[in-house]
Image (cartoon, rainbow, N blue to C red):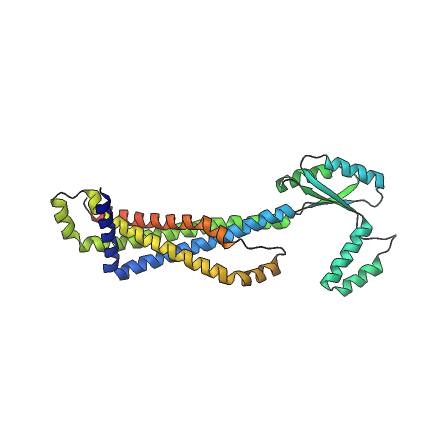
Amino acid sequence: MKAKTARGLFKEGFQNIVRNRMVSLISISTVFLSLTLFSIFYIVVNNVEYNIDAMQGRVELNAFLNNDVSQDRIKEIKDRILKNDNVKSVEFTSSTEGLKEYKDTLKKDGDEEMIKILEESSSEEQNPIPSCFSIKTKDSSKNQQVKQELTKYKEIYKVNDGNLVTNFLNKISRYTKISGTGIMALLSVICIILISNTIKVAVLLRRKEISIIKYIGATNNYIRLPFISEGLIIGATGAILSLITVSAVYTYANPQIMIVMKSLMDGFVLMDLKSLICSLAPITIIAGSVIGILGSLLSIRKYMNV
């Protein structure tokens, strides 16, 4: 097919949209709403995973020591831990240093009552804060393995792996992906049906014309292309409008989201819009176009004997 002919057929598809603008507008709106919901799920999942990765990089194992461990033994244990291939760094905090850090944290939080209780119950001879090793691994997935090795030391009575929050976020991410996929699949089916109905109207209106041009030798592709281009334009238009809307809302709502999320989770960071759109735009536009084309093909197959 010549390029000039193809352009003419695409132009015809656009004219079909204008002629049936009310039905086309409903189809575009459905694609727009569906892909907007998909984009919201995509942004939520990516932000959750981004923060999980960041938090996992900050996760430490805390190995708490008994009070009667000598300095020489502490140094020996530290050196052995550092020899572990999965360990990135080891920091030792004595009980005295730990108590001071805890008091500083309470002062920062303004918890005067707790500071008073702590000062009354602690002294050089009686310190409720144990000495501990703070251990960072090269890969947070190895935390459990390192934890098991640390528990073998009789001088260490407890090890916290720090993965409670990241495990919780991983569950949120997994459930969001599952629910998002299900909702998007349902909305895609609705879009395809609506676009199919839009194309069906155009086919029925031009049924006589189609039979004439087929009779004089028009190929099946020549007849199909205007309707396929119509579905493609509807799907792509809905996708582009969705991207514009999501980008505007994300930019506008960014400060408000940050305030809420930082109150719930210290250190939460929203991903940069540019990096999100770079990955989201191709997915959204392709999805919209495919939905539009599928709707067209379904309609043509069902309502045209070509």
